[in-house]
Image: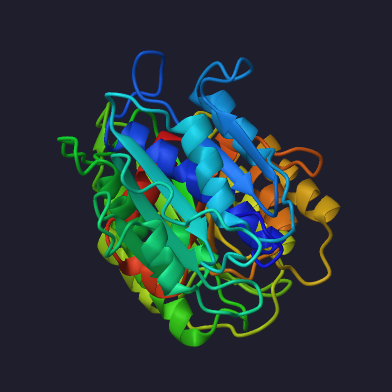
Length: 406
């Protein structure tokens, strides 16, 4: 759904969601997106005759990575909502009759203009297509229309197999680790999918810093939640396997707020290998409750690495941020990130909630204001709908594995 009621930021999140679903299906469910195997397509739609699609069978799409790049380039249409017409378009263009399983995942606010668009919302039903509809509150705060969502997913209809209808409070919830797992499991419901585990092994020495946002916008309760999450990550890093037992893995945890407000806890900042000592240091951190200066925090950590980390060691920073930094421009953030990159530091970013500065987040992830590498972003950016979601499911395993692999 690319209509006006979705909003630009939500449309961008929806595209990220689609890319994450493709990645999850490839990695977790071992779905092969290649000729003769599975393929995927994305339709965006708005009002009458306003549909656009990208497809893995398109001549300019050679592989799954090309497909994800094409999805990221889709531009928000911002018009009316002709969902029935879009579903008919999808059936005709992307879901022709086949012996393969056919699945449609429909993301909308569930409020189609059925007076002007007379195409039935049940157009995908009765054609041996599994339909999953996901309804989300729109940019104006209107709740998703459950009646339309149920019809889209063939609920209570005489024709077709009943699908699944889900409702989420906001678009950020699409990126919740548990929800992504449920969606991919639902897509694979007719396929015996293998179990997937996330062991991590370090192939070289590594120094990892977890940088916690302790500014007023986070709140003390949420800050305590990030401390618990940081300890889970640290424990997993410090207990991970190593290709060479003589190669050290060390972890530091830092909280930051305004300029000059970076605090490692009771002791001076240092990389630690003893989890008990590190956990005690994290527990001692008190919420700062002040401004937000991401640039100053990155500069502080960069200086720390130059003093305390050797050249051959992998240097990684996991940064909690919503992209908002007091008085900072994208160019200033770019400078701070590039300074860290020149010191050999690889940055990963955790974003919590829907209220984020997207341009700044992209610069934090890539160190570039002019372009955004989708594949790089998928490996280095983690989004969760709220702070409670940090502690649900296996998110800490996903994050720790990506940071370990780099």
